[in-house]
Every structure is written in C-alpha cells, then in structure tokens.
Length: 128
Image (tube, rainbow, N blue to C red):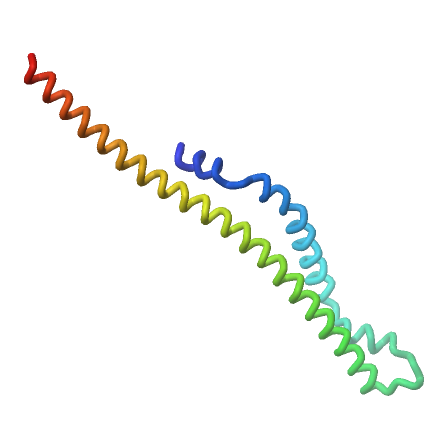
C-alpha cells in the first residue's frame, strides 16, 4: 500500500492537472465528431447541392472532398490526443521507474541493516 502512495507522490500532478482540460476538450471534440459522423455528410451535401450549374457528379466530388477534409482533421485531432496521452504515460512510467529503483535501494539497505543487527546481536551475546 505504501508503495502505491509513494508512486502517486512521484507523479508530477501539477503537469497532469494542467494538461487535463486540453485532453478533455480534445476527447469531447473527437467524440462529438465521431457521433456527428454517423449521418452521411455526402448525402446531406448532395441534397443541399441544388445548384443548377453543378452536375450530380460534381456535387458528389465536392461532398467527398469535404468529407475527406473532415476525416483528415479528425485524424489530426486524434493524433494530438494520442500524443498528449503518450506524454502523460511517459511521465507515469518515469515515476514508476524511479520508484522501482528506490525500492531496490531500500531492499539492499534493509538487508545490510539486518545483517549489521544480527552481527551486533552475536557480538553482544559473546560479550555476555
């Protein structure tokens, strides 16, 4: 239990809390686009393309071009969100690694102290 508390103390919570609103906004934006993407925007663009000069093929091309641009933007947003999460994960990994090293040092120190106490006990018993 104490190990987890120490690990949590090593995490730079200020940085995590500072980045949380950006990540939350990006996630909400991404989810909103994903939900809004359920309707076929190409069909909506075709229905709204009542332009007499535009042929159905041109309207389809325009709608598909808009959809590709929208998907590219969603992909960029997703990549930014993933990058931010990866940076936070790296911070946590560094904190856990530091904790692992401290735990190893503490184990060695406890072993040395235990051996010293045992040696001291033997010495005291011999003196008596």
